[in-house]
Length: 307
Image 1 (spheres, rainbow, N blue to C red):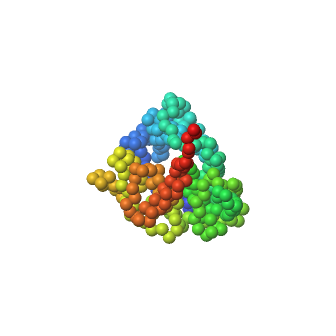
Image 2: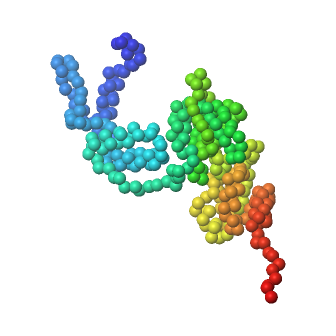
Image 3: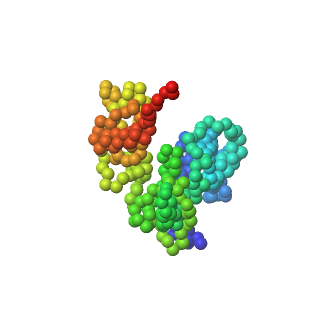
């Protein structure tokens, strides 16, 4: 056993002395280390203050850590973070820190969302890098089973989606978790396929609004003109990270891949927006408004007053 340790771990006496000195002089640790003689040539080191630890946390640090745990716990069915709550309670007890049960932050989330009960399970599969047998059912279509390698969970418009590699289509699939009918772990002989397509999810979705990345779609310049009142709103809450604005003309310019989420966003502004570029997007929006008008226009009847 001693020989094995010697092969795996090699720490010089000089390194130990350097580490002890660093613990003493580093303001973040400021360790009260004392040397005590044990015989003629031997000595040992220990803290001169009983109970001292270099991992001591201040009241503010514990409060911040506890707040973080509370935020994570706001997601229903996330047992992965229970152990953190246990550690917080132990730290509070050890350092006699009083916590607070006040609710000071909340998120716009729907705990009754269909499929939210799968969130914890899917999260676990991603962390463990475990392939799953997943059955998905798009609206008004047949169930579609596949072997799925989960990589990333994303929320958009108060709805959760999971991204991963779909063995059936040999490509990335994005599933709304409320349309997942079943999910279970694969047999051990099915190896997990690491991500080689998405990379950084923030970069993957950088050029779109939402979660839809259309095939064969390029980044385009989109110019929108707003009414003065709505323009101020769009400036304060940008539509996309690429947004620039022209205050003199009440216009914003986006460098973006047009998708259905962009169309829905534009439609949400109603008569307060005009599409200046590109022409195909202007025609698409005009066509939608025309169809909506024809469906919702007031019907007029020739009525004769009773005599």
